[in-house]
Image 1 (cartoon, helix red, strand yellow):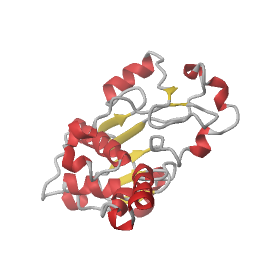
Image 2: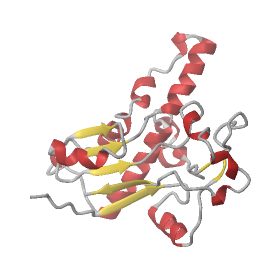
Image 3: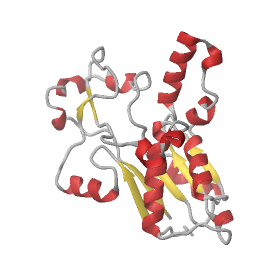
Length: 223
């Protein structure tokens, strides 16, 4: 017998909105998130557009000190999860924190941090590499950060595949209330090479709004 799951809250960081309300209204209006790439110089790539997240300010949300310890994918996941928690009305305290699990799906993890710290090592030497490289880079980093921030002490897991995420909670027999997020991380320079050079994509560089939509929204749900 399959277990029933109830979604009580949603959160979203997407190419067309940085919360559920704005994203939903943009989707109903048929708005596309595709636009010329701004996150890095894409001039050497065949495809020069992507569905980037726009106007997201991690420093404004988390403060300079905390934002510096979080890769951009972790900032996305945390912001979406906090919105979902607020919408759900779930209060995590001593009475339930051991039964609240965190499951996060990310195709790569902190690829931006990895690229930046590789450049630091190459240009300034290994002693200058950030001590936060590993916790910021691993795909488990978002789940761990959210667990610490919310006080959840149930099962915590970072699925390395956004598709596989849907199976994880039932396979692992996780907690009763699990904030979850799935989807591919925003574009990074090296990590996105295979996506930017796929055949045919560059044909829509002059009209990105007509390109096939390949970038899913980043949703978090409290179940």
